[in-house]
Amino acid sequence: MLDQAARITLEQGLSKVTFQAVADAVGVTKGGVMHHFSTKNALVLEVFNDAMAKFEAEVNAAMADDPVKYGSFTRAYIDATISLGEQGQEEYDNQATLYVLMLGDSELRELWAKWANEQLKKHAATDNTETLCMVRLVADGIWLSDFSGIDIADKQSLRDRLIKMTQQDFDL
Image 1 (cartoon, rainbow, N blue to C red):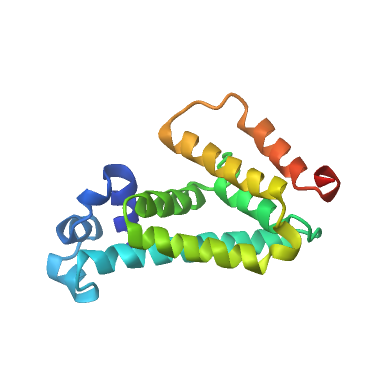
Image 2 (cartoon, rainbow, N blue to C red):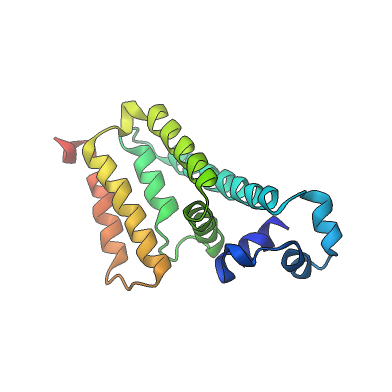
């Protein structure tokens, strides 16, 4: 149900996420959806939490594979945020779901901000520089441009440059 609600959000917009639309997509009755979620807000919150958990797992996995601690959160964030075709559509959709939901809902924006601020505190020793902050903001901008259908001439080159900017000697 969560995956179908996320798909409807991405393809048609949050306003089209209804109990009936999710029921039709999953092949159950509207009552079957309502059995699991008492309100549309409860459904949307669970979709957001599911996408957030998947995004966080992707970031954590990338950090675990990174042998260099300095900038590791930022590199993982870049990889989780910028879709280059090397990631599956599922990873891109997780991030897209997060962004679409939080842009349209102040409660979800607060949850995203809480998560992001916790991550910045958690990784302050390795990722708390102006350069790394700028890199993460640029990654967000690339994602938004990509999601909006704005052509980016050489996204791979931009990603490579951002990764290079996460190296400790770049920030000196």
